[in-house]
Image (cartoon, rainbow, N blue to C red; front, side):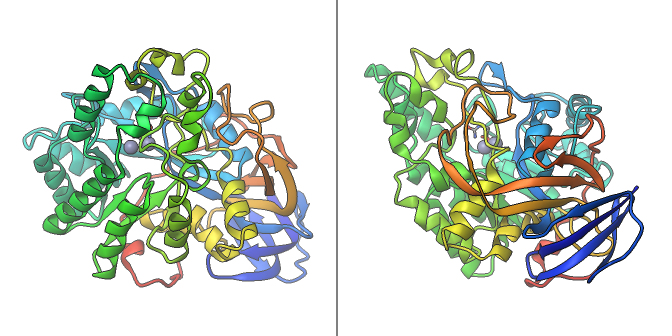
Length: 471
Ligand code: URP
Ligand code: ZN
Ligand code: ZN
């Protein structure tokens, strides 16, 4: 199968030029002006951006959590991701306490295989890392299985939280294998104490989810995670960073040359605490962790993205239906399943808020939605750029088209959208995943099972000075 994309404006993290792109099979083979090569499919990209497929390194498909299971599986979730211009997700597998890490990996392979329409990788959530059995498994995960990153939790005591010794041990192992620890950085012990006090006072409404999770608890976690990583001699990646207090800790470390990386998510750039004050139980739609913060934090996060103190915008896509699932916490905010949908809306939201909003350049847009994640998580230059030899994961993006976001029209398997009614400029039109058309002018034309598990390599790319290397 040969495809020719003509007349587009090709934008990568560092380039911006007009050219045609020729794809032979799964790979970009030629980039040039006025290419006249025989192709099975010709796509006219006049007046469109031609950008690397989005990489969302933080999704939770088909994940048991909070007494229920996230509403998108790998079939519905990857279709929704593709509609939004994302061609690779990195999803979180979970090792339950006492379980073999490799058995947990098998479970997640089973969930994804035959269902995904776009490529995917895994991180492993490690809840138990006893030196005798689990450390050798973690080594195998990183050396042989292509899973170069593990997530550890400082939050959710009794469920996912691990102690500092475990975090330090995991960081040491990851450092030895060119891997990376992703940290959910919030002081869960303190938060649980504050939650218990609130409930004892009869404070059960959704807004208390936010009022019991101070920004200082996140900042303390970030500070501790970075200190532990420094002691272990390994890099660290802070997930879903939500506020200025936490960002300051990352910036402080990076200014000293410490290899600390961090992502934020659209919910922290576009939503704020006031959403919890919506009438009735409506605020439950926004119960996610960390919680939405006061609005002034948003501009600080954009500055962090512009100045590279934040490298990535992921979604933390973890949808639960309002009607059947969020209701589990109708009488107690601490029982509302934590998480929200977003995998479909990330690219348009960030383009609209970032590029149209005058906060970041179009190159930086590509970098924070694709290239940086590819480098940090060992996918670059196979993914995250448009270059000869790279996978043909390509998005034809209309920078002028407007769209009003709504659960009536979205493709995520969830009955609400956090951004309902927001109008954005910048819409994904056509998507190729390894050369196959997945979205054609807004219509899904892909096939479940065409998306493949991608074994990732070490994160060394991200540790190099900020240049794009060749193949
Ligand atoms: O509320 C959230 N973020 N749910 C997903 C689990 C996590 O901590 O990422
Ligand atoms: Zn988390
Ligand atoms: Zn998450």
